[in-house]
Length: 116
Length: 369
Image 1 (tube, rainbow over the protein chains, first blue to last red):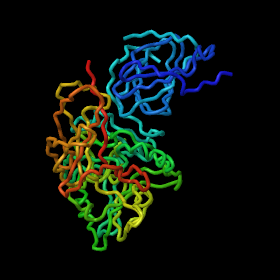
Image 2 (image 1 turned 90 degrees about the vertical axis):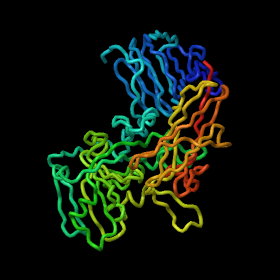
Image 3 (image 1 turned 30 degrees about the vertical axis):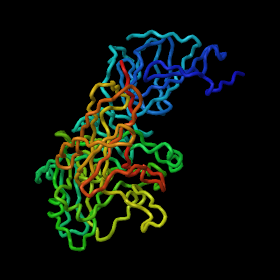
């Protein structure tokens, strides 16, 4: 049984505001699951994108504005965004504090279409 | 779910501050404006939803130690003399607590507050409370005035009492102050439901919990009020040796915040930047705001813009970041009593966030693009 030590997973800095690390991937032995931890600092935003599968984004800390389809909502830890297949979404941190999220995809081969 | 053109840069929204949709903080951009628009004005309620009062059937009762108890309709209230005031207020739990107090706060079951968004400044219109009290004729035996909201339920922190109504009292002098209002308008619009429609108390210079929403009743009493939200909430413990065990919060302490740059805003090296913010001190005047760009080692005076009525003061300081890197900005306000923001978190005895007016570090990154 693979046991994944979070502290040994390398954090990748995407830009000045966004970083992420893989917690469960194909490399860890997953056959149908990917979990990434995403950190967006205030002032940061992800690119508008979509995936061919469902994606669940669980807000663990802080607060974040989520745009999905035509809906816009600012949420805090304790909320989950479910982005259905092919529905574009975006995460914007215009709040006071960093947002830490778990991004969960039911595949070990996450495909992303960037729309901006 | 319909899929249409996604707004790539949507407008900022209120930020939920605790589970249960009772409270929302203003986003940083809202506090950059002198008047905070209603849709971005913080919400701090004790229970989910609103009482849903109907102005057509609404009656405000005035009773207790008065010569002529009465009740009046909302239409009657609108006929009384009207006063318009700019008033800034904050929830007494506004402001981040240093991380070294996190553990203590969690033990106390009090939510960790982040940012400064549980405050705002707006233009309020209403009837001076003194007009209503004079109509009732306050007896010489009066000591305090109790204000009862239409909101009630189990206490949000402990769950007990299982049923309690939100009510608090003001000392008679503050109740009779000509600027204490029964407000029915906010920024030119009828009071929004989340802010107490149709009528709320507005106590200029005092922390927000005193300004009772959905006002249902006014009761003049001949003793000191001991209600739950008066004596069991909104106080901080004093340290050993203090005369009183608790300090109960009333007037807002001297305080300042930095609103520009907003968290995450990019600053450029060698480019002048207008650092700006707000300062306030209850009913008192702010006489000085100073700014530090080196984590509090040195301080420079900021330019103050006078307040209007009981609004916050706005201040500015032109700073040219010398080079790329990380800096810690700070602001420090002083009032006309010589009171200045403390360097340290003030509630070190119990770790409660209430009345936290410390000098807040504001980390910024200067980047070359």
